[in-house]
Image (cartoon, rainbow, N blue to C red; front, side):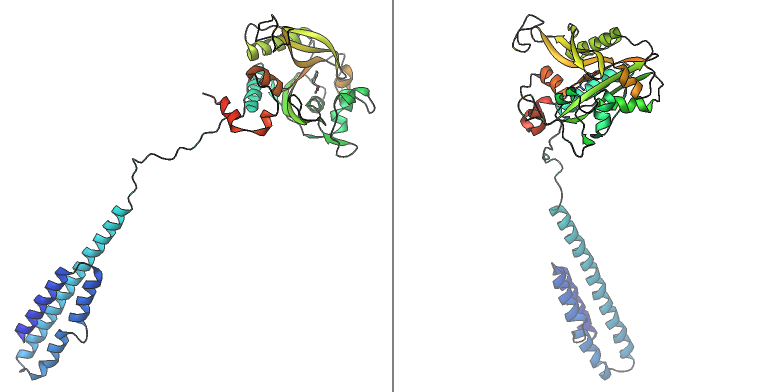
Length: 344
Ligand code: DAH
């Protein structure tokens, strides 16, 4: 019986050794250690043994069982480990593989120009103000010396929402709002960039929605020469140090006197070409000395305070600066257009 047990042990251990997967190991366990297995069978025959032999064989049977079980457990662990390693090596990531390129966006050319202009004026001590795009008739027109029925209202075809509320037609209402905020106390020195809306048919130079940048300076002793000096610095920074400006008389209800400002042509230097239509000059903005009525309506003493204001269109500035021939390019966002304005 002893020999039989030892033989079973060797057989089982050999089979465990040969097993190449967990299933095979399990089969060995079932066939040798299971209730109907050969070891149980041997033990059943113990009744025929002498009382002296019984404990010997019993303990040997237990040893054999244990030896097989230990070996099975070892093998199981080894196979599991191998399986994990196989899986890991199958799933390894090749970090040397080149990645998919992700495309970098860039600032919209209009945003870039607006920020450039903002930086320029911030550098001269201005702060940036904002106002609502849905505006009241009062701030958009009346507070700017454009009472109801004033013919100059026709210069700006408007999108009305109600009789008293409209989409602002320019950024000038922010002048009135800011002056009110300052409660009659100068100095005021602000610019205001933002969207404006007009009932225009869209074409190469018109859009029903576009942007403006407003400027306003109010203090004691502000003169036309301050306006001219400020705009000259602006024109040189924006279009080149050799640029000059000239002021032409014009009309805006909120300024008196009012001017239109031209910059000497950066394309031909003033000799005349297609960009300046042969004149040597390009119009870039409207400006003037703030009308006393505008100051008074907002609570400023027009005997003590004076000021200048200007309004420009960043689209126009960008079109001139970059030779863009159609304003609609700014709004259709064709990437072939936008990609040309990648910043370094
Ligand atoms: N608001 C004017 C427009 O949209 C532009 C303008 C002209 C603004 C003269 C000003 C200014 O502040 O002084 O046509």
